[in-house]
Length: 130
Image (cartoon, rainbow, N blue to C red; front, side, top):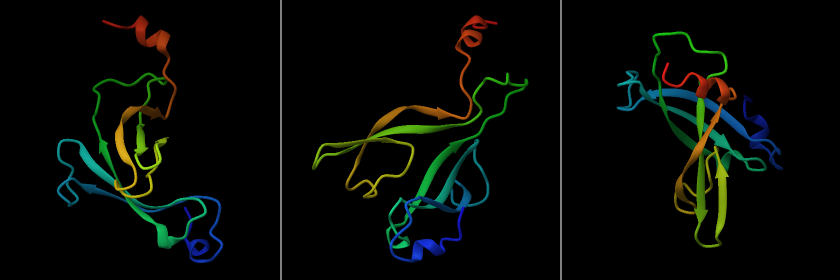
């Protein structure tokens, strides 16, 4: 995370910026209802300035498990989404925000999740039903 001072100058840096992360309850307060919360942050794309910043909201669901998890079971996933710009048929597949705040790109759906750890598929299917 940066203090953003480089993003106030021109030319803009070639890296993106994620700043001011916060967690909110879905009703807008500090209480998480049913394990559902919102992660919010400011996002600036590479080669853009703070004048082109986005306020991003991501749904987060938290659950607990009564037994310890195997080290190869993913603990966190971020949605990999497909977006379509109908004007020029441009398709983006990304975990990041897209330009236009739903006006330029239309959400086409979830493709899957990018996980913090790889799955051990042999172990996962060997232990099915146990």
